[in-house]
Image (cartoon, rainbow, N blue to C red; front, side):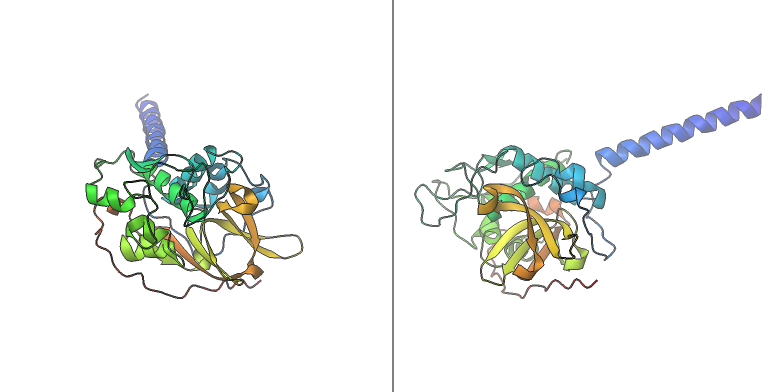
Length: 292
């Protein structure tokens, strides 16, 4: 009888322990930098089957990641939900009204970062919006929810009068700058992230693309893909003309010259990063070396 009671007690404790671990995993168990094992993530045909506009990024791609990147994927879905058809693409530095990085009012911990002058978006605005929405989720249960005035001002996407914030000016200006803005803002300026190699990339990493034809693109990486003919692609989410604004895109690697990939590692520094402007160092990107 005593042995039977002991067995039942042990079983109950095991069940309670598993329940506790499960709750910890779902609530706070992913509050750490996303790890990787240095091997390439190759998507399946099913992973890219939903097309351009959907809000299933977390459902589809979270199986490939743990940690903070899962919240970035949720951030993508939040941003995409504001523009089910993409919302339109527009970029014009001298436009009146000014170009709008994203087409809805964006806030971080209740602090307004953008009052959109247009309902449209462009690439760096979409990647930044997903970053901010991801931070809102990561910091949701943080004890520190107060954004200081200096950091809030640096994160703003427009000047107080509603005008365009120029490139390289504070956090958003660096993110929005030509070249590798994600690196300028997250690594060089705020010290919130780290540079990674293309082979390490995981869904939810931030990627700047340098095209062979010139120009660049700010996107959020979703994965590498190879079609039935062996042609290689990168899948990403951003805002671009051919998706009518925000949406998924699949681009052949042969069009890409270099990339720069950055991973969020220290989101808590959003409360304390040094807002003093520093020079954005021009650095080379990485070639995508994908050998079969």
